[in-house]
Length: 167
Image 1 (cartoon, rainbow, N blue to C red):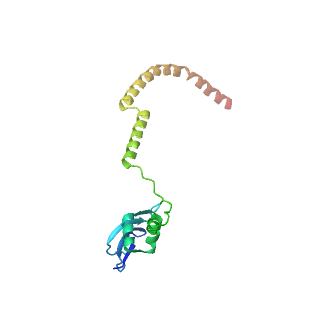
Image 2: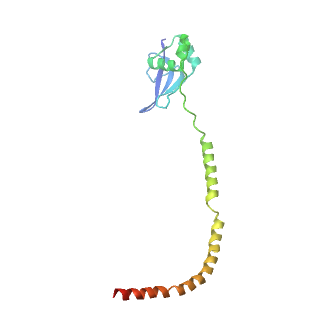
């Protein structure tokens, strides 16, 4: 039986995701596979390539022939060079690990709590503040009445002068 190492396509339209599989050369592209030895996600940045090197070396040693796309992937991972006895290529680019969602949430919650405590007063303080403000307003009211009694005389005099000056 002629065995090939080829790509089995998964995923949705315009979002291909492949499995690197060992299959009989006569099977369909997405048909039954003997074994899955890796995966390839070309849309991720950088592309995600994972290959089980031990199984790839075994199948290459037994005589499995890689297809052209798989051969390129094996060269990128260094498995082909290891099989042929050539020097290894530069290491693959690896995406930065994403921060743990729970840790990010906890940090944001702590930050929000510290900002609230620093800027917003408690409800009991808000209720006590208007009562404290009413007392000074009550004391200001008699002073305002006295000032109002003295000031209206001056504007009326100014109002009387304007009609005379205009007429």
